[in-house]
Amino acid sequence: MLNDIDKLQIENIYSQQTVTNADCCPECKTLAYPPVLVCKKCGNRRYPEDEVEYVWHKKGYKTWSKVPLEGKCTLVTWTRLWALPDGFDVRYIDFAIVKFENGVKALGHLDCEKPVAGMTLNGDTIKLREIDGNDFYGLIFRE
Amino acid sequence: MRKVIIAGTGHTSFGNLRKYKLSEILAYAALDAMENGGNDLPPIDQVIVGNMGAGILNHQTGVESAVVSTLNLEPASAEMVVNGPASGASAFKVGYMAIASGMADVVLVTAGELMRAVTGWQATDFVATLTHPDIEYPYGITLPGYAGMYLRAYMDKYNISDEMLSSISVRDHHNGMFNPWAHVQVEVDKEAISSGNDAKVINPMVAKPLRMYHTCPVSDGAAAAVLVAADLPDIQKKLKHKPVFVSGIGSATDTHCVHNRKDLLKLDAVRLSAEKAYKMAGVKASDIDLAELHDAFIFLELCLAEEAGLFPRGKAIEAVLSGKTDIKGQIPINPSGGLKSKGHPVGGTGMSQIYELVKQLRGDAEKERQVENPKTAMAINFGGFGNNVVTTILQNS
Image (cartoon, rainbow over all chains, first blue to last red; front, side):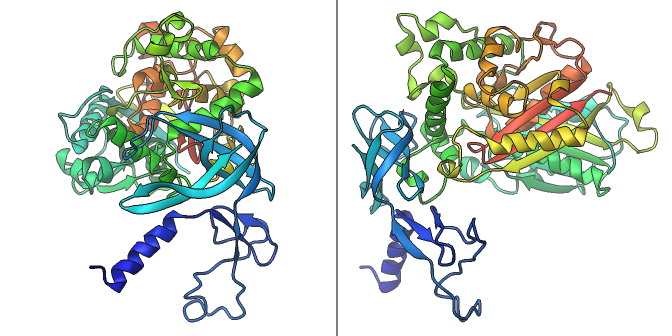
């Protein structure tokens, strides 16, 4: 029987393992994936939201919004990987790096019969695997 | 800053050393370096250990203290330097800094890894923990995966074939045949691994288009050096060997996630670390007489050589094919056999590269692979997939 703390911990692990959004700087609107604490363009800082007022004493702090990575993207490069880490029961996985229309680049699984660099793909978030009994949702790119 | 001399160097064989503990192989390499340095040197006052995965692979922490006690070096100061696959060169850099800053006079640096204590899958998994814990690692991506994606783009851009790449394997394995420490001392036949009838079986895909003979083995091993301050009284008279000087060290970082680089094919940390090292040493790329380049995946030799300015972009493969990078060539690369043949105990590789430079600069390499009269030598130790890179330049005058 899980108590509230156990549930919260599992929820935290789950949320940490599922990052398919870019973070948007509230000052200059630059997107960052993965999340950063200092904006690469304008230097604006991001603080832990739960602590921003009482620990960091930042008044009028603007939170960073989330922008889902989905939709049209361009294939930059890809591979079919046989040298997988421990814990996978498939022979290989196809991987790709893509560039979304908003300029954000990302790594994800590839589901495409004849991939060619420069082709247009569609990005989506799906359940890719289970890690220690928890579902892992990640990016997949399809034709 | 004080000048620093490499007085002694040591090495263990690379391969399967499972019968030893990690602290033992680090101490064996250190003992070899201490013997090589001779008995007339002042006492060691600082020990630096380089390693990447003792806690994960060997369930051992505080390795630096174990090494000190095994060698009976108390009360020398001792610290561990962890910087992924660049741990070896970073440990050397910290050892250099300790003397150059005046905090120490004699420093022992030993770096190594015991990777074959776990299965191949677990070793691959261990190295993959270098990747981003949220948006890379859980997807199942590994370093060979990044190598495959990079190689595809590189081959397309510069019109490089699988057979051309195999020439690097052939050269590395030939050099490694004469290196007594090398893990895989086997000559490789180019046709057999690239165009022969059984090539697909002998040389299977690891991460398309990256094949098995394009990647290094998983190795155990360690290498070490004893560094001394050049301004110690009568130190030159106490050296057993011709002195080798640390002329330049540069290191730099790049984005943790490979996809965040503006140009996938540019390895900025390599270029910047080499530029810093050249500036510190007061030399140019054209002054380099030989180079040890981190070819965990053989094509990296090409990319590193190009980023460091040894060849124009896209032209390094021509240098390999024309024999310019052979032992007798214009700029010999990886006379040790490189990571491909010598092996790659991740945290020890950078120190092993420096060991090879010293051997070459002293003129002590095996005759089949001794470069003719080198004066300036360079090593590039490549951490992650170019996330953290250290370049070291040594000279014998």
